[in-house]
Image (cartoon, rainbow, N blue to C red; front, side, top):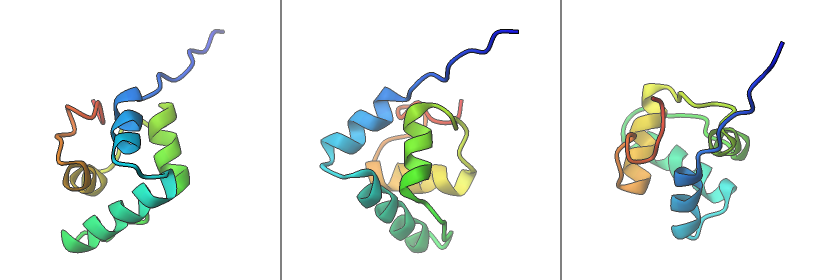
Length: 82
């Protein structure tokens, strides 16, 4: 039985770094965006790490909306969820 390694999301990581945010700061921005959207979330450094490493590729809809709000990019552009 073979297992394939997850494909890292280099786009999301590059966007976060270009924004000058650590994974902790990015998670905090996602939580604020969720609150602003009326969709509180529990984004954490570990969750951001999982998205970037590719171990989690499909965020729930509320997280996708928060990601789009924080980055100003679409989920498709961020290579998230599809």
